[in-house]
Length: 213
Ligand SMILES: Cc1cc2nc3c(=O)[nH]c(=O)nc-3n(C[C@H](O)[C@H](O)[C@H](O)COP(=O)(O)OP(=O)(O)OC[C@H]3O[C@@H](n4cnc5c(N)ncnc54)[C@H](O)[C@@H]3O)c2cc1C
Image (cartoon, rainbow, N blue to C red; front, side, top):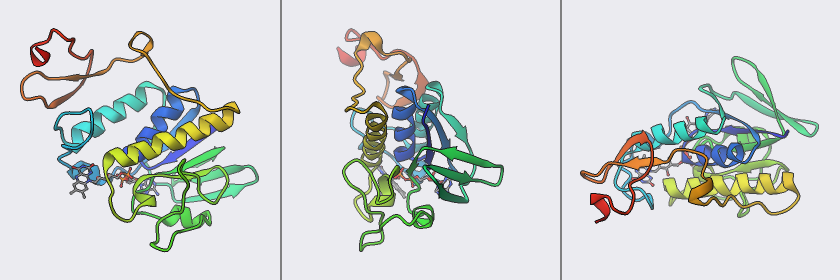
């Protein structure tokens, strides 16, 4: 089975990892945990009531763990192409990858190591699916935008990259559409009081709940 390595655990990387692993790809995520989202008030993520970055990250990390993402809380020091594979180097070991998703925020050194093309503003050049100039290397989120960075945009970029990898592996376009009946996981639950996300997992309120009355 193809192995996807995602570097960076902000909203971009977490979203890429979720989509890849949920749809059956062996997925590893490396993250040093310095995402700026920790400091966000996050009142602009569509579909979530006002929450905060820490709560969002806690739930997102649980979500990716639930679909089997192998999470490494460590820095990737080097990445290099090795034939059709990539070798990812950390202080603890070396890991092979068939696809790489770089979601390293403002840190561009891994993209430079791989000789990815950069735009004039210093960001990594990508197409709509996050493909870089290097085959099977994707870049998403803040790494690809100098300004106008938002969590929901990074998450969308990560989803697009993972869907492109899934489509490449399948040989035809892949969508990730669920209906309530076949959703395999517990869903984020909203508290009823002030509408803030309570960070726990469980069923969402039904239509007869006080909040929806
Ligand atoms: C104070 C503040 C408030 C904000 N408020 C909001 C808000 O309210 N709403 C909103 O939408 N956005 C907000 N943002 C912006 C938001 O934080 C970013 O848009 C978002 O975090 C970008 O996500 P990303 O996944 O692209 O990159 P990042 O979140 O930057 O994630 C990159 C991750 O990669 C990891 N990493 C980097 N290099 C390596 C490596 N070599 N090995 C392993 N891991 C690595 C880092 O540790 C980090 O965790 C705010 C930002 C700031 C600074």
